[in-house]
Length: 381
Image (cartoon, rainbow, N blue to C red):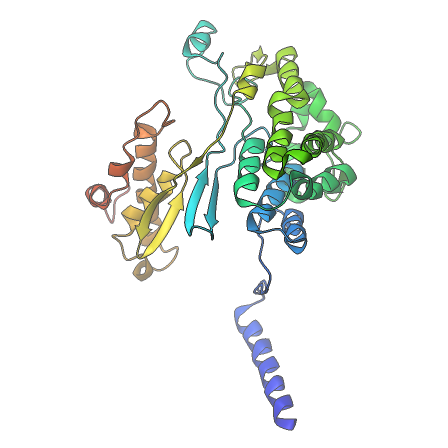
C-alpha cells in the first residue's frame, strides 16, 4: 500500500509541476459513451442529453443544430442553410446532404435589372433563398438517425420557451444592430430587445415564437405517427414547407418592406410554391487524399471544395519544417488560399446550372501546376 500511495503522490507532483511549466489548459475530455461538440455549451449538452436517451451521433447532431438556432441566432439562422456530412457505420461510407436553399422563382435576372440592380444586395429580403435547414435535418434524421423530431427538438423547445442566459457573442451581435432593430425591424426588436434596449450579458432570453414554430412541427409529426417513423418525420417537415409555417413566412415577407444595402426598401420574393417545391437530397461527397488521410466535403454548391484545393496545394510544402505560424508558414498558407479562392470565383456554382470541372480542379496534376505560382518570398496580389 505504501508503494501505491507513493506512486500516486509522485504522479500528482508531476501533474502540478507540468501545470506550472506549461500553464493552465483546458482538460482533455474523456468518455466511454460518446462525445458531442458545438459552438455553444448548452447545444453541446443538448446533444449529450439525446445520446443519454439512447440516440446515436446523428440524433445528437440534429438536436444540436436545432438548439444552436435558438442559442446563437446571430450566427445560426433557421432560415438559412446547413451542409451535412454523415459517416454511416452500416455501409462504411460518407454521405453528403445538400442543405442549400434555392432562389425564389421570381428572383430572375430580368427582375433585378428591371428594378435597377447591378448585383443582388447582401442584406434585406431580396437575397433570401428557400430555408433549407429544416429539410436537411429531417433528411439526416430519417435516413441516419433513430429518434423522432419530437425527441431531438425538445431541448431546443425547452431553451426557447424557458430561456437561457445571453452570452458575450449574442450580446455583441444584438448590440451591433440595436439601432436597426428599433428603426427597421420591429418584430425582431420585440424578441431581442429588453425594454427597448439591447440586453446585458447574462440576461435571460426567451423566444416564444420559435418555440411555437418547433411545437407545430412536432405536432405535425405526432399526428402522422401511425404512418411510421419516416413518414411521420416527413409530415413534421411538411408543416414548415407546405403548412401553416410556410404560409406565415410568405405572408410576412410579402407584407413587410425592409431596407437593404442600397438604402431602398423591398418586400420579399418567396412564394408558397417555392417552399412547397423545395427538396434537398443525399449526395456523394467530394474527397481528396492529403498525406494518407481521406478528407471529405460537400459539393460546389457551397464553397467546400476550396478547402480541398488548399490541401492539394499545401501537400507539396514541408509545413512542419516551417514551424506553425512562422512567417514562411503563414505566407505559404495564405498564397495557397488565394489560388483556391480564385478558382472558386472562376469556376464554382450550382451544379444544377453550372458545369463545374471538379475532377480537374481537385487533381494532383492541377495542384502541382498551380503550386508553381507560389513564390517563397513574394506575395501575389
